[in-house]
Image 1: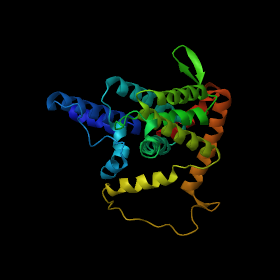
Image 2: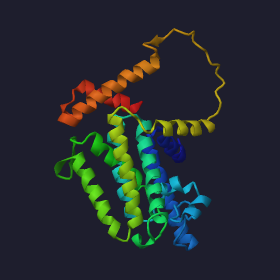
Image 3: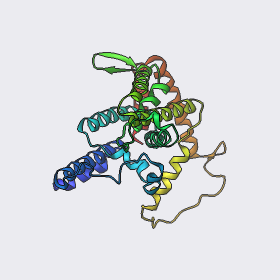
Image 4: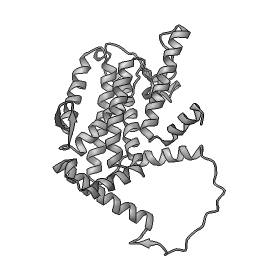
Length: 289
């Protein structure tokens, strides 16, 4: 197997967030090469989210693409390291598509907050109007989601165990203080992502997945690029395979979600280590699906 084939195989075997990390790294390397050989300090202007609303209208795709652009190495390194560790926890506890919903809706919410601040708030409030780049809003959304939904769950941070809710609180306070620094736009986007993570978690605790509509839209978009199956669709007779008014697949999904909710509640109260080996195995299996 050639090196390219091996890399392609590993990429295809990676989970969704690992693929996002790889794409971010590739775009960063591309940007550095353009800076070096193109002799420009702004290598990817059509990927960045402009502060002016009318400039954004001409480049509407940037409300997503800005989240894949990093010019600074440490900016990239911090975002991707946090994304890697947070995504591993999320994928062990929640559906991969739901975790992606939180991430991308966080990026979108960060973009909306950024555009609102620059185009609606008084000009005196902002000291600069640089375009927005970076995945920080999406990463913030994931951290705040966990900090609310699994507030009392402890994670190892350097040498100490810290509850997720305290990590979330510290980050929000830092972003609020950051509104008075040179990176106002970035911190506004962080707070937009944090708000999305908070709303997603609180509504999910009430049994409402606010990302369901976004997930359907993304499934539709993805289906446009998938080849049509030549297999014939076999329709089952009405009434067969129906459980309490649901199909077997829907019924199994409902039962799995109820079991996940019970396990998450146990984690929130007593920590991950309180789970039985069977419960851990179940979460791992669900996270792989």
